[in-house]
Image 1 (cartoon, helix red, strand yellow):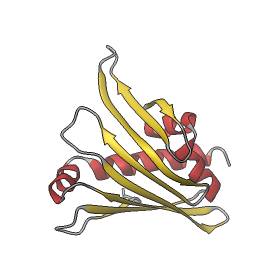
Image 2: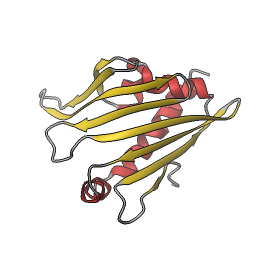
Image 3: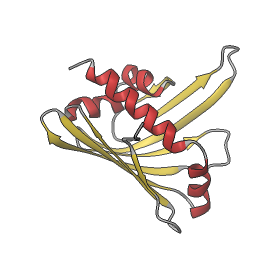
Length: 155
C-alpha cells in the first residue's frame, strides 16, 4: 500500500518536511489537531493536557495494560492561527531526543480537500537521523490514515 504521507529529508540537514493531502475540508483537518477527544482517537494516545491557544501546552501518553508508561510527549504551542498554522515544540520524555520545533501549515485545496505541511527542525543532523531510523514514516502515515478515517466520518 502506498504511503500517502510524504517525508522529505535532505542529507546533511537537521530538518524534515512532512506533507499529506487529505480528503477532508480544511476546518476538519485543523480541528483534528486541536480538540483533545479527536487527537486521542487518531493518535491513539491519552491526552493529559491540551491548551489549544498561543502559549498553551499539551501532554500525551500511552500506557500498557499494567499501567506502565510506554510513551509520553509534551510541548508548548507558540502560535495558533485557526485553519492556517500551528507553531509548537515537541518533546518525547525519557528518551535521548531533544526538543524539536514544528511548524504546521494547513492549506485548503478544494471544498473537501486540504493539505498539511509539517516543517520539523531538530537540534542536530544526528538527532534527525536517529528519528528517521525508527519506524517514523510508517507510524505517521498510519496516524494520518486514522485521522482521515475518523474525521471523514464527521462529514
